[in-house]
Image 1: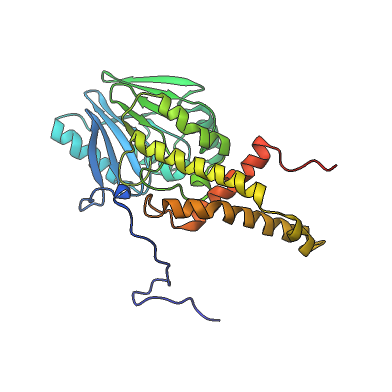
Image 2: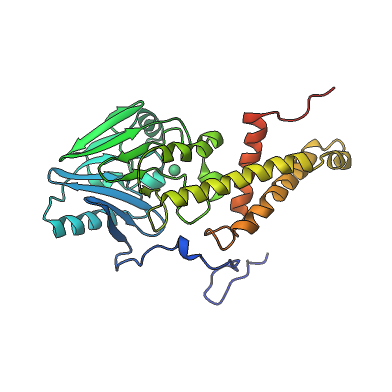
Length: 326
Ligand SMILES: [Zn+2]
């Protein structure tokens, strides 16, 4: 048995990619490994350049929006740094969950049991199901809308249907010109595998229009190093629209006949060859168009898997799935 090739530092023999475009870069991190900045007035974002969390400082206490374990104890350090500089209490009184996923809430237990936790009713149901002590279940839940008022500030939470996850909500800060909406748009980067590991293709692809219906200048989108702009959302929408158009073209132009004839009774082999051919045909021009434009665009498995999911949704959700036998 041979071991995988490694480089001089002992890392596996890893592929190289195009340089990360300037649009995809975050700010330098401090000695603890985080960067915190003022988004608008008393609303702050904190990142490790992979994950992003946010918090609101008020005279009555701090409200935290998501607690990714990647940032972990640095959320507390960022809150302490900002509240000390502004002479405000560092007491965390409320926590809002954008959705139930552990990679965004797995540090929420660090803030103890004596705070108000707010989330969608589906978030509560899924967290009861998952039974993870790192993610205490929200006690305040809502079905469609909820307005949080703390220390003279207002935050509007809304659920507009499933998208990335069944419970992913829109968090609007009307007094801060900001929307927080997680795991759909990545500022300056393409989505990772399978539309950012999303459950609902139609919900995911339609969510950005809902997000743009809100008034905002800053979008806190949960990942990477900077807050998104409306232009970032438009660029993401164009990437998705290009995949949709390319998938339709590929479904129409790749002929499955010879593939099925070749494989005979091995029907699954033919299905695999046909769907892979459609996916590669559809993804290739998109990968070429966005390489050097958006971060990660030349990591072709990300666009392949997203294209595969969209191409299947075109067949299965929108229809028709194929021609009707005569
Ligand atoms: Zn998620």
